[in-house]
Length: 266
Image (cartoon, rainbow, N blue to C red; front, side, top):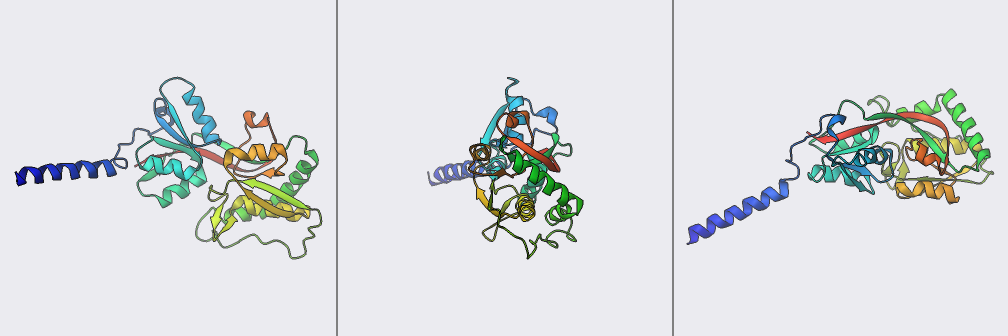
């Protein structure tokens, strides 16, 4: 009787362990974009990855899109085997893969894109000033230096942080930036500070405009509304110019190129 009970207990424990670890052992079935139809795709709500994946979902071929408030939540769901893949921007994808064993990025990007700064449609004066500042920052190499401080090899990353000129006149008021600080290396928290390519670029723009930069962290899908309503002057969060977004807001000139990629389990 004791032997039967022991065997039963062993079986229960085995099943329990399998249930706990079963998510990460689920076999990968996505090896290219052609495999996406019929799969469950994880995305961050309101992002370009969401927009692209929605097209697959609307094809009515069994594709399902699971939307998360944070990209990290989508990645954890992938690790647990609850979804088949994650569609997200390339640089944050690299950061997630580096921090989580058992994940990889498919070689071929889903699409290429360009980032720009979101701005209200009627704020043409500020748009012109920012475009001029961007042009100057590109011309003098500041934008390239900011990006290489976060993206690159060990010889460049962290070696050239942006510093505001000591003599900046900030008498032109505040420049309020809406962002979603969960998008490394573009915006994220480090030592309780909002850092990354976008905050540094926005600071450089504010320096050019003689303004004090104020950063407001919020959910990604709230950024367009904040800019549209005037609660924020600009939205800077690795935002792609899309026809859908242009219905509600305007964009400055682009400041960098990026790509949407697919993360899968190894």
